[in-house]
Length: 118
Image (tube, rainbow, N blue to C red; front, side, top):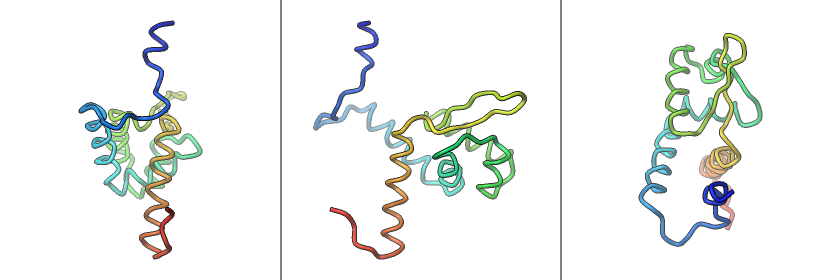
């Protein structure tokens, strides 16, 4: 039980960040700075998809999609399960979905010129 409590996420972040937190955030932002990955993650926001489906959504070959997914898995942004001979991918939790959604809402404001929310 103590181990479970030790891993429990705090309700709010402290004012200062650890080097590990900053590096993990930088890795996530770096991986999101690639159009193919953003398209694949957006496709995964409400469903699970295999490599071929994600390649179609992203407009790339399955081998390219697989390489991108490997990086996203390594960074903890997606996870996969085996379904027969296929790997099926999904976002790894609500934080990834929220991060992606907020980034794209921000992009909508940038593209449309609409006022930003305060």
